[in-house]
Image 1 (tube, rainbow, N blue to C red):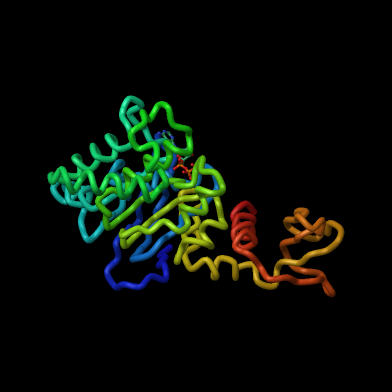
Image 2 (cartoon, protein in one colour):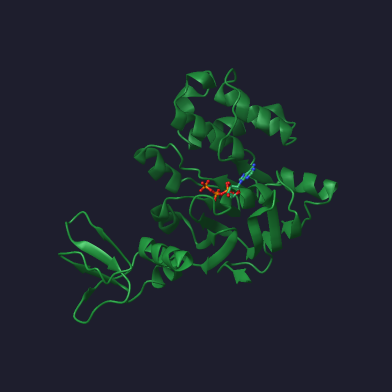
Length: 288
Ligand SMILES: Nc1ncnc2c1ncn2[C@@H]1O[C@H](COP(=O)(O)OP(=O)(O)OP(=O)(O)O)[C@@H](O)[C@H]1O
């Protein structure tokens, strides 16, 4: 299945063709083909769909078992080109391991050193900039072990962003963030031309992303804009005061009405679909 996001450049930042990664005999990523250009790209999918495995390959942490992968026009299978990719890439892993005895400032500065930024003054200024941008100005010289979970997540995010890499790969960046910080994440300014981020928060995709991929069972099953994902459920969402057994999915909303997905019965009050509706309909189709 060939999928292309609606992106704005002709040169793709990430190109994958028939990408496969197996753990034992089980494929975690099972023939992913995609071409992603500039912008913020969301990656959705249920637990175990293969999102983290795909992101780890794009971040050059994991080598594919089969298929072709290129980032920024470079081949990660070639050691010299892989180093070049890493110089231009920032990665926030799903469970970032942070040195607890470091301060956020020390850690971000250390990551900048690893990325070969040799000018100490520039590095320090840049470390302060990214830490301030994630709201950690006040605690940047406190030991990481003394920070809350959400603060640690933001330290890892700042480390990924240091040096404004061209390609930013974020695995559930809003994980553990409070509502205020989630909102802050939405307005975070990044110089990176391509951001690929996995999330379970569909509204984040609507707020942040220009394009979205949805994975099920190691495969990309949808590629398009958030509006196109919502549009999958056009004409297939209705609301009623009581639960309709003809719906393929239904749930009670905050107003007390039931929202239904499926073929609406005649006379049903059809409503505009949301991103959640589009995703849930897709998930339902994949399950059946
Ligand atoms: N190191 C590993 N060893 C064996 N199996 C693994 C390993 N990592 C992942 N898997 C398996 O690969 C599949 C895909 O996992 P992955 O973590 O990529 O999914 P995910 O979409 O990121 O899930 P989640 O939303 O729960 O983070 C799952 O079946 C998982 O159990």
